[in-house]
Image (cartoon, rainbow, N blue to C red; front, top):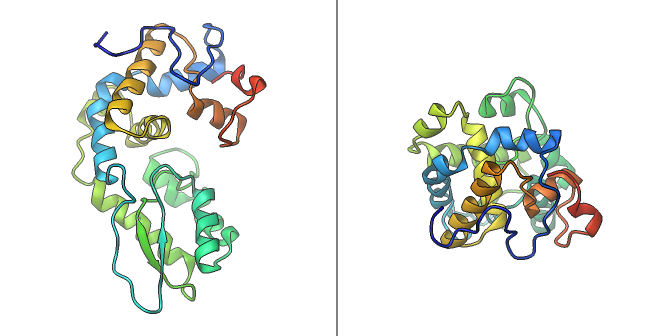
Length: 226
C-alpha cells in the first residue's frame, strides 16, 4: 500500500460504506476495473490528453458559428443540453446522433451496438446551427482519435482489457477527482477495495447504478450494489 492511500475498507470523504460482500452487479464492475493499479499510467495519460483541469482545446471559429464548450466529465445528455442552450439545436437531435450504433460498437470493440458516451472529446467547438448535428459529432470523434493516438495500451492488453475497458476506468477516476493528486488517491482506494473484494461504493458507480447523476445521493441510493 503506497503512502497516502486509504487502507482497505476506509471510505473517502462523502462516501458511505456498504456491505463488503460482492453482489452480482458489483462483480461485474470488479471484472472490468480490477487491474486498475496496473493501468494508472494509461489513465493519467488519458487525462493529460484531455487538457488537465481546463476546458480542452479550442478550435477556430467563423462569424457563422457559435462557440460551444464541453468540459471534461460531461455525459452526452449534458452535452446535448448545453448544445441546445447555446445554439438552439434540439438536444434530442444530438442524443439521436450519439445513440447506440454500429459506429459505437466499432469504436468500443463490443459485440452489440454501443453509444458514443466517452468518445465525444471535450473541447470548445465552433458549431454552425444550420449544419447537421452529425458534423459536430464526427468532429468530436476525430479529435478523440487524434488526441489518444499515441497512448500505449500494452498494460491493458496484458490484462485482457480492451481500450473501452480503459476508457471506463478513466471515466470512473475522472468523475471522482479533480486534480492529479486526487486521481492517484481515488485509484488507490479502488485498488484496495477490489483486492478486499468489497463493493466500490463510489459516487460514480452509485450514480450509474441508479441511472441518475444527481449531485446528492440519498441513503437509499447508497445501499445499492455498486
